[in-house]
Length: 199
Image 1 (cartoon, rainbow, N blue to C red):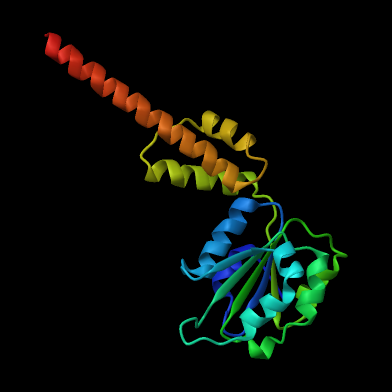
Image 2 (tube, helix red, strand yellow):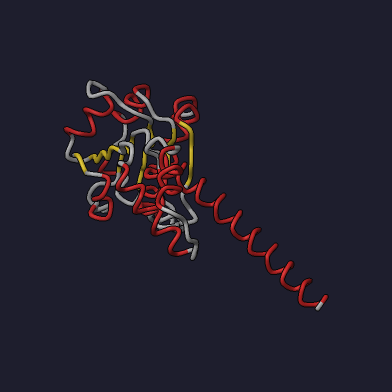
């Protein structure tokens, strides 16, 4: 089943507890992952290779029900076609209390992994394409407004042009600007303080 990246909040995790997040927009994927995990401390993160190498331990972990581990979330990173063999052996009915979120880079339309998630009603896939310029401008303006930083539209455009459609890169650039502005304000305050002492 296909969901759009802006529909993350509509995903019913009690019905569909295996989700594939794929695409080049790492920043948007991270935001979606944070939203899906809901800041749970018990979220476990694995790399696909760890699961493939020790798949018996993985299956043991997901099928064993513990009184202390209800609503566990498992995040598996760098997933590709190799994970299909694991996926085919997961009994969805036995893991209703567990959420499994798979993260992958770009997947072609013919990708067997992508096709499985698009066609199977038990699974959800969400594509994260590069952000367009309008989205990045809005994100930048909101960030700068929240931090009370004034920046000209031409400078905002320069920052956005360096982002390659990825909001994570945008936020990194904006945090540098925020840090620089704090340093400048701190320096100005010291100058004002020292000049007032001289007078």
